[in-house]
Length: 232
Length: 232
DNA sequence: CGACGATTTGAATAGGATCAATGGGAGTGG
DNA sequence: CCACTCCCATTGATCCTATTCAAATCGTCG
Image (cartoon, rainbow over all chains, first blue to last red; front, side):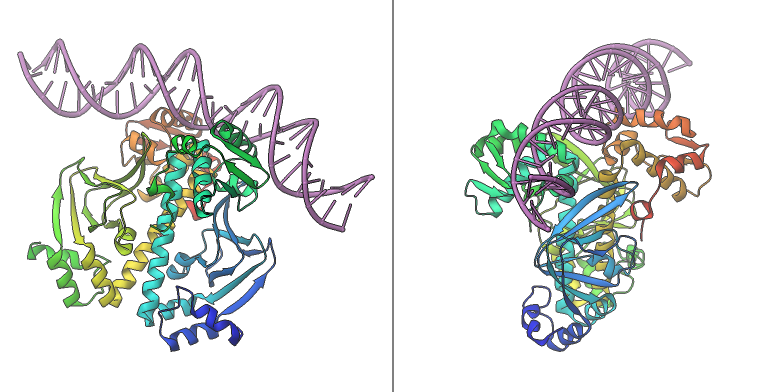
């Protein structure tokens, strides 16, 4: 890694409170690389050799079984992925590929575990991150088990809307096919779900979405902070 | 907690490697209680006051939204629940109730966090447990998104079968309604799924299940270690 | 302009949910 | 011991949701 990148890495929540020498040791072992879009980074089943930290761009976590494939999550800066596999020294449960050109920090698993043992502040940060990931999946799981496809879409739109400043309109942050897979439906069904939401003031034009009847949409969606709120 | 219970608690994986004085402090603050069946222990949305450790019996984690309810997981000895909420000092994402009469250790959240800060071995054990929980939910989520109801049931039967010694028959460990909810389907649909599996040698009599055509069932189920194997 | 991929739409099908009714123990009280 | 009740599980019928397959449309990029 180039010395000029160190300060930026140092300011990441994961590293900011760790001891200086431990940080330096960790970074000496790490690689900061830029990958093009649509590049496969890891494959589920492989041993966890690195912890990944997305510092720029976007990474899709996905999984396959039988002939099927589904998007599990999308990781944006500054997010880690595959943390649990690294800590358990186990195989990856998910595959990962870049969505866009992305800058990613790779830290060898052994070094992560060593730093975890040695540096208490780092251990605490790791645990907070991991606990956050855990709660994120639990919410996704509740979303899928307790809601219909239309409700999932409605709530997702409300989430993007508030994340983007609640201006009455929003931009879909990913391809519709990706959003469909993330929400656990086919692209065709997503299209139909958007049509179902049209009477609730949802107007779609490409990636641009206008919400013309927020109250109506909220009544339909019945958002639940224990599913929809991030970071709680 | 009674002094006579201490050695047993001490031998739990979560506590066995922690420092003696830290362990004693933690246990002085903790409660070991026996609860009857079908008792509500916690409700989602409540602040995380305690970490729960199931030492005997069985606890169901479930969640509600709109009018719907679903089983998220079942915790048997020795398992913890609500660990992430405790570490993040956040509200519970799931409710919990006893399935059977159960003996449960309750440790105040503050003390868990304090011990986590002070005792490195405990912190390591906590992290292993949390990482295991995380991977568990990821597997559940993959199961639900990548498989049909019949496939989920077939794989679940194979799992119980191998957990119970692979003798050719198995006992369903929970009510069928609970298993249905855990697998993300209605009781009616579970019944029909069992019928669908009959041609594959699955004979059901109450909670007793015989698998008369393991190869056939495996061919249908296509088990995947990255979904079905526990503890990896 | 032409090709390709993404999205949308339509039609048919399958998978699962709902509603209603029946069968079958386990437990209760006579 | 038996009748009764209650709850769980099963079955049937129907409805609704979502998937599949096919085709058309749209936009982008070379």
